[in-house]
Image (cartoon, rainbow, N blue to C red; front, side):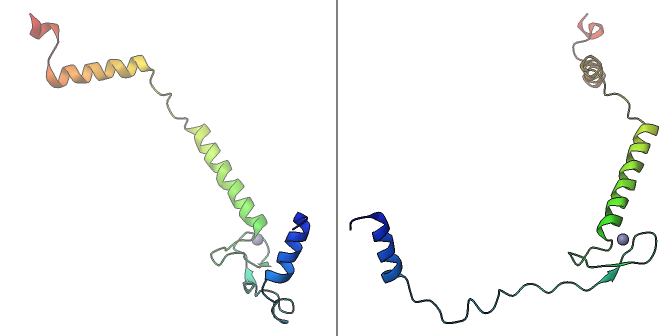
Length: 113
Ligand SMILES: [Zn+2]
């Protein structure tokens, strides 16, 4: 062996199995059959589209429009009824202490004296 290229060329020519005759080149790999055109569930005129999945019922633009409307609805609801601010850690600790005192009665001044 004199060069890496010579070594590789020798391996490629001598060691690889013979090329299969006329099968791989002539026929491309079978692609999955495209789904048939279906009517879109979206608003507006009836229009057909080809779904990319069997469970899809709306075309791309209509689906995006639905998502936008859904998001706008969520945002409007969140603005109309904002969640109450979470209690601060002082309030949470105070409520925990109160709950413990009520539950056990242990450690209060009334029982200690
Ligand atoms: Zn559509």
